[in-house]
Structures are given as C-alpha cells and as structure tokens.
Length: 113
Length: 110
Image 1 (cartoon, rainbow over the protein chains, first blue to last red):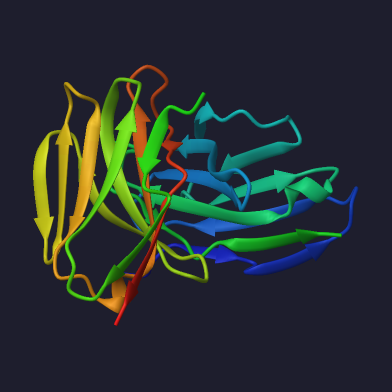
Image 2 (cartoon, one colour; image 1 turned 90 degrees about the vertical axis):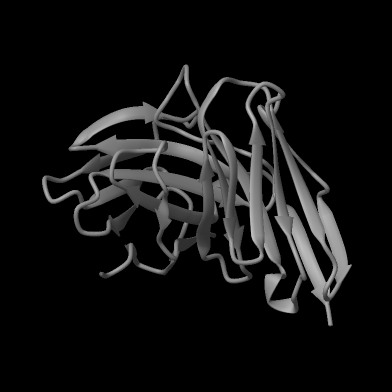
C-alpha cells in the first residue's frame, strides 16, 4: 500500500507570492490534516478535511486555505507569502480523523526569501 | 498557554538505558498519540492511546486519563532510537484537530 505523498518536496518562493502544496493520502483514507512545523513554534495544526469538508481549522490567518477533492487528495494554499511562512508543511491521513492513527507524509520544505 | 507539556526537552542516554518521556495535558481528550521524528523531518506514529497501556517491541506507552498524563518508555535504548518524540492530543471539545507538545529530543550514545 503506497504511503502518503506530498509534492513538491522543496519549494523556494519570494515574499508576496502564493504557493499551492499537494497531499495524496493512503488509499481509503478520507481524513487529511495539515500541519506547519517551525523551529520556534514546533508543530501546529492548520486544518483537517474529511470527505471534502473542512471540519476544523487552527489559529492561522486567512492567507492559509485548503481544499479536498472527491478522491481525498488535498491541497493547501498560502497567499501573499511572508518570511515567517518558511516552514516544513506536513500532511497526514487517516480513516476517520485525529482519533485514528495518523500516517504522515514526508513534508514540503517551503523557504520564503 | 500550552495545552500539552512534555518533559524533558532534551535527553541523552547511554545505549542500553531505560528511558522515560512524560506528557501532561490540560484538556479532555479522545486520544493521545506518540510520534517519532527523525532528522530530515519524517514523522511516524508510534502509539495511539485512549486508556491503559500499549507495547510495541521495546516501546511502552501508558496513559492515566484521570491524571491527564502519559509516559513513553524505551527499554534497552539503542542509538537508532535517537529522534524527537512528540506527544499529541485530540481534544474532545474542539475535536478533529491536534494539540502538540514541544517534543523531546533524545540522543542515545553507543
């Protein structure tokens, strides 16, 4: 069974640009969660999608958005990038959500210059 | 205010030692997860607990729901156990999300 995949793995952008990250969950998993990891703040929850519906959102500005498609693949978008958005962005999938075992992707390393 | 507190932040052990990492939380939870992150970023879920105790190889995780506390134990530690261990809870009230601890960085010296 293929694991969770994330594309791209590395990304360099400049301030003001926007970026779209993609996450393909394990086949059969309907929940996809997104996280931001920085050295200063650690892991922080961004949002969780289940069957194309956003069920919860973390404390992030509206520049951070996401969506989930009917095949459970998910994308997250960050608009008007700031230097502080430089981070490792991780997604995780599961059958039902945070009450289930989470399977993490390798992450996308975003650098904002 | 951090809903999840981990201790210690850093831990260095000799190979073969018994290791304990602690996690305390302040909210009602539906589940607690122990995660392992190796250098390079990949995260692996070690355990998901809602009560009692689980064992997988040399790893043991326990949780006391009344005391809002969980421990991760590593018996006969090995250099390959060197990693960051992160405690995460799924809160009952807000649901469908995680609160994370700041992680414990473990180094096991041969």
